[in-house]
Structures are given as structure tokens and as C-alpha cells.
Length: 113
Length: 115
Image (tube, rainbow over all chains, first blue to last red):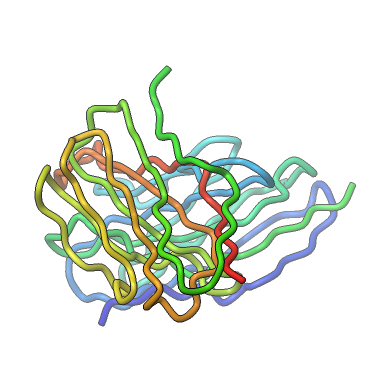
């Protein structure tokens, strides 16, 4: 069965620190990849997505993610986090010919000023 | 103002009662989804519908039922057969196609507490 793993469950950083959240998926075929963010008290919203082309994808608020096919990974990065980045982050995969997303368990990020 | 609405925000029920959660979208999306979010488990798919009058079970459909009589509405019923109904329920919609436009848009969620 397809699955998505986010190994970092809870990350605590100080402002200006660099961030990398891991995401690995298990599926050998074509995938579309997503990162969603859930700020406290807000809707889940799309941060960035990868469908094809340049494996380095840039999203909103200075986030980027790199698709490494050989490693089945789509890690999320930000060079310098802000307090306002405190949120829960979810990696998701749309695998094969389906209209479903499979979500990881999420990573809770806390940024302290 | 386009989007997805879910009501109510908080819902309380007694064990043994069925309860229906509302989800409405005015985005003209074909596909709609229901997820359950539990701490440490991420989002798990309950049911989804790609077109009116059709829906499919997701990964955790037992104890739930849905209907899709109108494009804009996809209500979820949590039945008394659902063993652990207390959770945060999220509704989403998308353009039903495998295009680069594809993404799921989420509603604000309903927190259901069953005692």
C-alpha cells in the first residue's frame, strides 16, 4: 500500500534558524507531491506542489521543497524561519491514476522568538 | 467569496446517536472528500466523491455514510457503529482531474465530541 512518512513529529526552532522537514513516500510510479500547512485556528492550505519539471519547487512564504526521485523524498526547507511559521505541516502524495491524496502524520513546528 | 463551509464548528452528541456533518462548496468543483484528523495520525480519508450521485470508500469508511445529491454538497453521517467518533472532521474539494491545477481545498473543519 502507498504510504507517506514524516519522521519529524515535533520540531522546535529559534527564529532565523534553518528548517528542513523530511517526507518520504512509498510508490514506484509517477507521483504528484504536496506540502500543506495548518496554522493555529486556520484552514489547511497548500504551501507548494510538484507535478513535473524542475524538482526544486518554490512555494509561498519563502518555502521550497526538493523532489529526489531516487530517494523517494520531498523534503521541505526554509532558510530562515519566523515565529509566524509556527504551524503543523503535512506532506501528501497523489500516486498513480487516482484522485486521492495520501497524507503523512504531520510535523508540528514551533518557532520561538 | 468562494470556498468551503462546514457547520457547525463544534458538535456534541451522546453515544448511540447518529450525527450529520455539513459540507458545502461554491467553487464548482467536481470532487469532494471527507477526512478525519486525529493527533499524531495525520489526515485519513473516509469517503470521496468524484461526481454527483457517486462516491467511494476511503481508508476508514466503517461507521460512516455519505450522500452526493448535489454538486455543491457532501454531507457526512457519523453513525452509532463508529467506535471512536470523537475527532476533527475536514471536508475538501478539488477539480476532479489529474492536471497540474489539481489541489485540494479544505474547509475549516468540525470538531465532533461524543460522550
